[in-house]
Image (cartoon, rainbow, N blue to C red; front, top):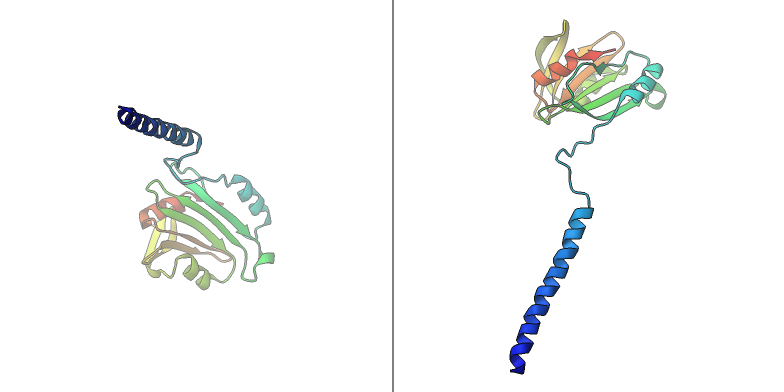
Length: 174
């Protein structure tokens, strides 16, 4: 008879141990942050844009009027004094279809800048966006729209299709 009680105590002890472990796991689950539904962490670029516009030797462009589904994810300005190849403005976004698109500008040499920012995409023609002629580039990684001015080169580039890049380009204001 003693062996029967001992068998029940072992099973009971095992069930209690599992319940205790389950309780600890539940507490950890409740108090440890979980991944969010949207892992993209938007940035507010307005202050950096205003600061960079005061220092930049050319008009920096940023979009106005895009839907809130366009989420800014990165912003950076590097002035002439820190780069031998000209000032550089970068503003990156995730579009409503979760694809990357960015505005890149420089007053430095255009061809190496276009090649770098478009990830070596090749020119395939031109397109008109908001009354301006843009060169259209396509590549295996990135697409791009490029507009060269007298003092500045603007590249709207990313994994997004050309239609989405054109939407970003159309919203750019200086």
